[in-house]
Image (cartoon, rainbow, N blue to C red; front, side, top):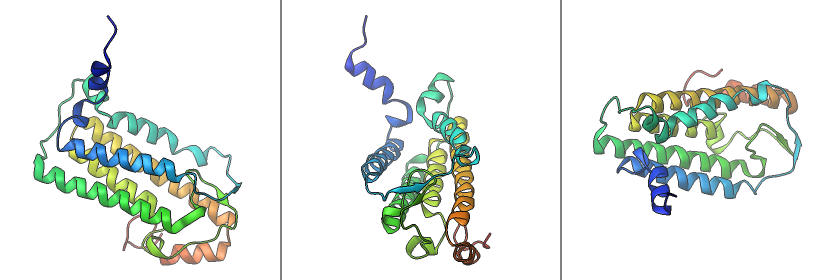
Length: 208
């Protein structure tokens, strides 16, 4: 007997996606994802992109981490949360998620047409060291890592936590690959000076 539309929706929108307040996390992520996809049309022409394995090494941990973070993996494994964060803590973590994705949008808007979803050099590309880029060199990744880790802690399953860690690791790998590419493509002295002044991902840490 074929499944009804209601049954299909119920099976997809299930687990932590369907229970409040973790459902709030899903709504924040959906809003960010839709807006990010729409914003992808606002970008300058790409002049060059690396074709090395290093430039793509981040994809595997991000994809695997994303699959582990979904509620369907926990359901398939019959997994239960390691802890119950409670409503107050979950709402606090939702604020961290919201702050993280808003930080990505601040960086995205400040970067303007130099933004790209992939590691690229855009037309007229130069070092941006103001706004959120005065706090960290990769504020989009900083915001995403904070939001993803907060989501993993709020969900509380072992697979969700592992997935969040894998995504965070993949984004840090991408940041390092991007730095190597931009150092070679932009003015090396300008980017080296920027690296000495501003930390990579975590504000106020020693610069590396």
